[in-house]
Image 1 (tube, rainbow, N blue to C red):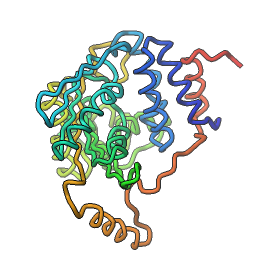
Image 2 (image 1 turned 90 degrees about the horizontal axis):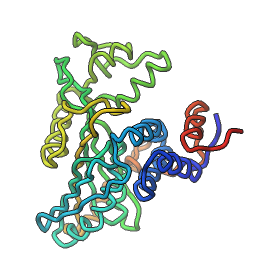
Image 3 (image 1 turned 90 degrees about the vertical axis):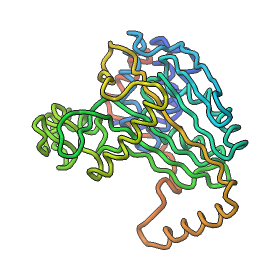
Image 4 (image 1 turned 180 degrees about the vertical axis):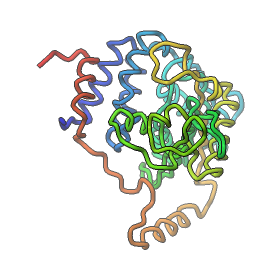
Length: 329
């Protein structure tokens, strides 16, 4: 298992994407997201997706040359049409005016419509926090999750991320999690490895709890925390799909299939200026101190140091090298 630097991961990802039809700007934005995912141990949102990105660029399922269209329908709302392209460059196009809107109004929403999958939402909310604002972000996904007591796939894993600035250009607190009990990729990986999954992650086709990953893939994921995660997942569906005019999870085709219609996802971001609360810094500092005083507890994301280099699976890295056109050893 080779140790690969983050610079090499980003460079190979960029090379693979441009080799398969992506323009430089979107390829760079996606490569940065892959780099961050690998650096933070989020392997499912990193190089794991690169093969499907390249296949879908070749088939036209994602437009590698899409130019995001930015509008500001209201003073506190920035809307970006990703035009069936990648989510990362669409967010990058909308972030500067959304920051200005939040600074002017105290709060703003940034909505991205008609995009390819966004993968890790913390990549986006972290940028909001590093700009000095509180960031809340969410997106829907392909249908994988059944409601408590049910078996029909209605919504996706529908992740939520939340980031708080540290006042010095960094991130003081950040969490990023699916509203399902686990990510679909975790079950796919378990199935490929011939490993069982924990009970509570999924149900089979009859709606019964299962530890068999293949039965889970033929059934549905469960919500995290039962009805609580189900409610959060429905909230994400309303804001990310209904509020952006993008596709409902139930109408999304499998994310990693080479062919098919564009993903057509939406993302919803809330940007809040902490300066609207005069005591925000003092109160957050007290909260952080209370957490730190409890041995073993910590603020999510606090003090996170990127891993560099990263150990990458041999087969996965060989695939990355092939996609990027690297000469054979």
